Length: 109
Image 1 (cartoon, rainbow, N blue to C red):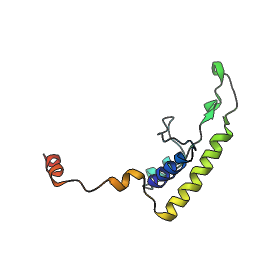
Image 2: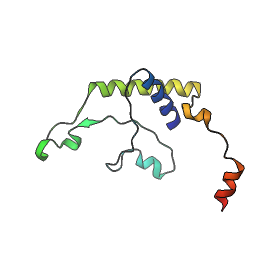
Image 3: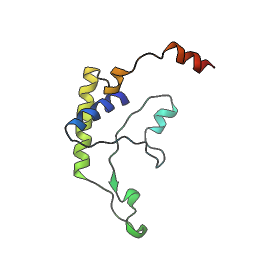
Image 4: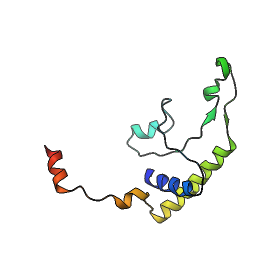
């Protein structure tokens, strides 16, 4: 599934729609249960202000997402759906080829 989201992000970048790819480092999420049981998962996350309700000076504050981030997320999901339908690949994928035999020999040691 990542390949379709990366293809979608490439397309959106050409149109000036910002996206980013990052591994979330805040702990586990709802997908963790699926991963533990051998399922592949994929998701998007929207950045928020006041993560875990922590505002300035560690005071309580409501979590907020920016409308522009919601719009970019929706655009990414729509474009990823199109990429799935087309079995699209990222731009770099077309230039990737099989590993040359001499490189395979070096890797075998």
